[in-house]
Image 1 (spheres, protein in one colour):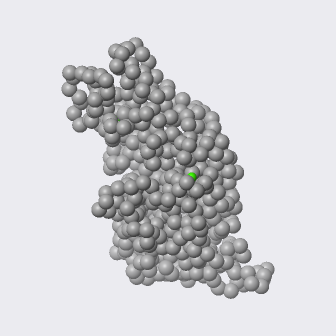
Image 2 (cartoon, helix red, strand yellow):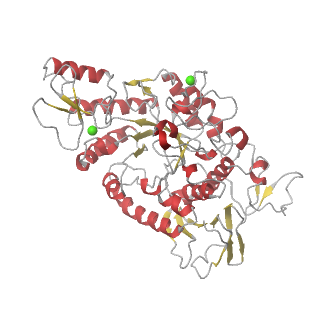
Image 3 (cartoon, helix red, strand yellow):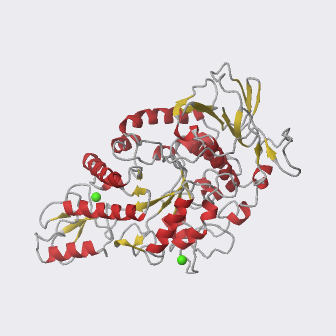
Length: 540
Ligand SMILES: [Ca+2]
Ligand SMILES: [Ca+2]
């Protein structure tokens, strides 16, 4: 049955989205009401599963509630309506279904990946009560909140490291903290490829592969395992939904077997508390390596990310079939490894140059990348500001701060750039959020609509994925079957219109357009499907 979606609530969203704004033949339409045809934007019933669109917030750069220039938890609470207003059908909010907070624990650095106290919220970010309030607000709106958990290393001001140092200075090998960190005794040769630094006041050295201020915990120690498990349990008891595991492959440096065995144990223990735990690990490596970790934990898919990644390549008028064939193979590989296995794609994160640098919206590359990312399986991640076309790259100044610039709100938010940022203040985004919210043609509005389409077609995220193998074309797509129904998604990232007879490409079962999103508007005349240049279509 063709749905006629009344979109009284979101006229701005629809007016310029290049979708069919034909006059409705629905007699119930009221005067002045804009009705959208051939589009399903009505959300399906909310699902409890983890196939969700997540939004990564670099906390110190997102929104500042108290005027000190540093983003904080209260700032995120204040911005919840921007992220998800709790009404999937309102069209007034981005509609993300999950939030990843970069580390919020007490730490002296601006990025807080060197934790000095896992049981304290960094004072510049707020309080434990603020976190509880944010969790509660997220849950009221069916948003999962995950915390970034850097446990490969701590900060060197951590009490654990002080106790370790004291134990070594006093030669107290029976002290419980003596083996808390990975260390190498005086006179012994340090293992090749790993970095060790002198332990002040002793002849011993401690492992610190990232920075001398980031001593690495010793995961052979039962006390360490218990300590990091206690941290995870503490935050699950507080109500968080899961974790992003930082530097997961470095737990045992260069030893994937021992590292994966740790994560298997860790996730298994946490799932005893929370069976639907959301986990995603940072294993920044090729698929051959992430495949080793998948039996234990889901991993971000770095192969599809960044400028050379498969999404960016396909979005820039490349071959979509290459991307869909890859996803098909990827899912076939990881699915048998773990019942929770899913694709976790992204374009860029806080360690990467921002996607707008190589995927500008002006030539529709940003939009096509978003189509490939959001209208696909699993749990895609959007980096804060990506939906605004925010720019930022290391560039010549070689600083990650430029990848973590202040969110471009344009409404007086006092959040400021992190220390060390050198990126040009001008043209930081297509336009500030305040303007994009009011603009039907903005990238923000585009992302919002994509997420609505994804929710209206729940098969896309969680179905059984089969890549189409279309011949002699760069247009590609997939069929996804779930819960007794199926959808077909086709992406035309090329610069030319594509016309297909659905019967001759094995898609005769699909009889209507559920959604069309892109530069043009797809149309279906009988079995003849026309997809304009740089446009994607969802068929049912
Ligand atoms: Ca602040
Ligand atoms: Ca380590």
